[in-house]
Structures are given as C-alpha cells and as structure tokens.
Length: 182
Image 1 (cartoon, helix red, strand yellow):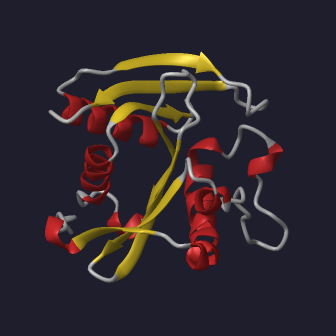
Image 2 (tube, rainbow, N blue to C red):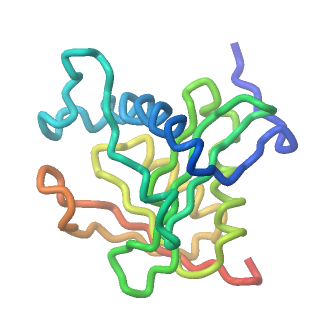
C-alpha cells in the first residue's frame, strides 16, 4: 500500500499552552520510544522501564522560559507531533535550536515533517542549529535532506562534542541562516 502525501492545508502548527504541558509529556513517551530504535543501546538510560512506560525529559521549560517555544503539530484536528525550540546552540551565534521534533509514526513519510520544519524556519528568522545523535540515522537523514532543500544546500555540518550527554557526547550539528529573503 502506498503512503500518500498529506495535503499541506491539512497540516497545522499551533502554539502549545502551559495547560497542554501534560499532553506534550504524554506524547513525548512515544518520541522516546521511537528514538530507542536507533539510540536504545547508548546507555542504560534508554532501557524500557519495568512498568513499561517511558519517561521523557521534563519539557516544562518550553512553556515557562521566554527563550523557548512549544508547538503541536496537527493533521486536520488530530494531534500528530510536536516541535520544541530553544536558543541553546553549540555556538553563541545561535538564535534558534531545534530542541526536539517529533511526528507520530502514522504521519511519517507523508510530507508532514518537512512541511512543518520549513514553516517553523520561515517563522523564526536568524541563525539555526540542529544537533542529532549520530546513532539516530533516520533523523540525520531527514534533517540533512530537509535543511538542504530549504537552504539550497547552503548549510554546514560538523561533528561536535557537547557537554550535556556523557553517554554520547558527539552530535552532528547542522547550521544555517534564515533571513527575510528565505
């Protein structure tokens, strides 16, 4: 069976409110579960909990800190994922960092993720960074293609060592600029 593209007019990006924080945390369990496919062998922190419920990092800061933004992705009216932005890049020149980005499996491969990424970049001008765990091959492939298509291949990619993950300190860091002409 083919995986038909979803019409762009059916894809919506909505700011998430603090009252929706529990919904984001619930959805983040699926995000973590999906990531275990590629990153699950990095450390014991990725092991399936005894109660069977993955617990993701607490994303409340995305609702409380002025430098962060949280968005839900919807297809028609159905919750389809989330986007979390912050300003914590590996370079002091970073205006926006893709903190977390997730699209539910049923909407993957249907054009939702690239459309949302492009819209987010258009709405948030400045210097961008996206850091990807090397083991997360699917995400790295997606980001390379999405950024390349958006920038006309005008981006850089470096492998950097970061200090916030002792089990996997390396990241592929994609950097690019979005200005009013993009």
